[in-house]
Image (cartoon, rainbow, N blue to C red; front, side, top):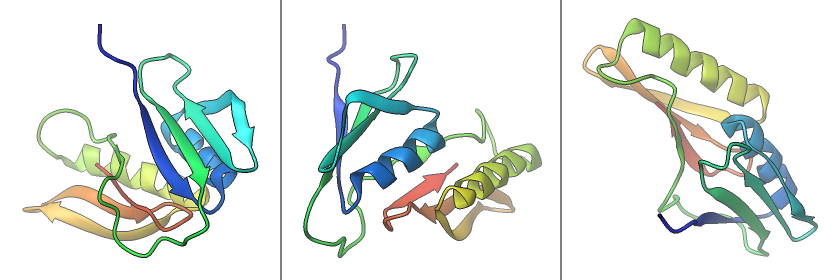
Length: 126
């Protein structure tokens, strides 16, 4: 059996990031871990890792060294249909507070969409 693990992230507003990422990943707020200095989210199916956000005093100053990618394109080669799924997910995330930065292509097919979460952390929709 694999060891259970959690992804931890710093935040200026842990509750804001917890709400954003819970909606983005179809997770739920972790019961008992939703206070002023920290909030967590969990996969309701208990398959994916938990993600915790802790309040820190300093602002983000550089590119993330680790980030989450949201995979909606589907398996195999990129196609017009996978581009539709990626763009639909990116648009939904913008409605939740994300910022779309750019679209990157693999040849003539959309490869992934670079985005920022509400606190400016980079991630991709692929």
